[in-house]
Image (cartoon, rainbow, N blue to C red; front, side):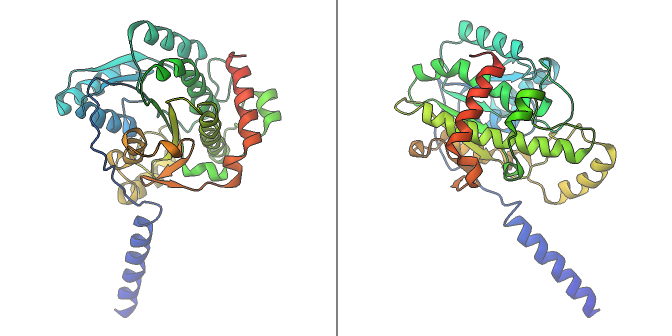
Length: 318
């Protein structure tokens, strides 16, 4: 009996420890209204993106869901409209795995939308394969597509007052690395048929997100646009929908017990999108609605600049 109580105490202790560290919740406390403002959210039809879109719609923003799958986006839009009571939630087609699609999206957006106040680079995936342009899919979707999208929309962001770019990264950046030779020669930062191989590629792409934001802030200096990267927490989303069945069998019970729900996962994104007074922290990385220090490799000026220059070439901007 004593052993049982000890075991139970250990389990409870581990649970409390995990919920106060890896699975800690936070809350965006900003009361900022968004009426009259326009927001673009990639991957806004599910998970963190949908929860973010719902909150911004409730605040009165015109929310554009930039998604690949129109049918799923339309279902999400109806849900958001119903729950928020706000009608200005619309779909625009965007496949981040196609540079042509990114260019088509921005062309359409710039012709039809007179303003942009907030760009949320939310979409991401864990998978193996190649994009339409032959890039490793995680590098192509998680970083390069968002890189091109952001660059093409920057001028419109600058036209407003206080535009922001929020890029959803992950604490997984800590295990990432950037092999420029592999990137230039193979058009990827890792690939392979085994789960650990494309998880490593995912970590690499998340490091790209943090470095991209670090360099973007330098290029936005003396403008009215700021940018932030975020770790949303470990969240129950469809991020791992492409992993194998046995992994889902292992992950799902743990996810249900410990992982944050999408609403909780959206809080740091919302904090960086809405909180007043954080403009001087442009380029920084946030977690649990607070700025966090990053590993030296994630704020290496030389690597960040080189990644930007290589990304310009790979995306056709230079």
